[in-house]
Image: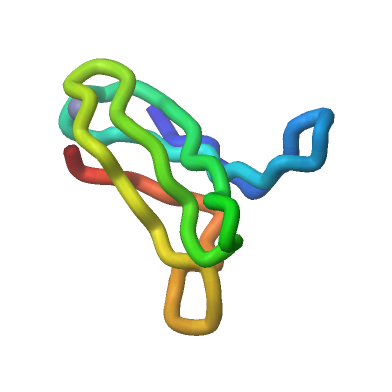
Length: 68
Ligand SMILES: [Zn+2]
C-alpha cells in the first residue's frame, strides 16, 4: 500500500500534514501549531506524540512517514 500524503488545509484554513505511521500501519494528521513552526499530532493507535518542524530546515515533503 502506497502512502498518500499531502499538504492540505481544513475548511477553516488550518494547515495540516497527512502522515502515515509506519509502525502502527495507520494514518493521521499533524496540525500546524499556533506559532506556525511545526506540525504536531499523535499516532491514533499508540498515542505517541509526533512533531515535524516547518521551515527551510524542516520538512517540505508531501509524502510523510512517521515511525512511532
Ligand atoms: Zn503508533
